[in-house]
Length: 74
Image (cartoon, rainbow, N blue to C red; front, side, top):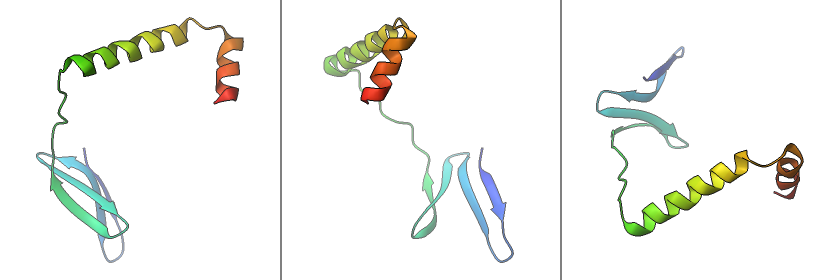
């Protein structure tokens, strides 16, 4: 869903409506076609996703003290 901010002289739109995405950067507002990110299922990417999933599961098993230690180190 797009957000619309109306001003006194101009409006600002950000988000997606249908196949169009409205955005802005330091140069002003622009519109681009909405795209679906490519998710290649290469063996290498599948392995990295599995590693990330395992690390995420391991994080949930840490004690509060261990999590605090990791957060302070980071």
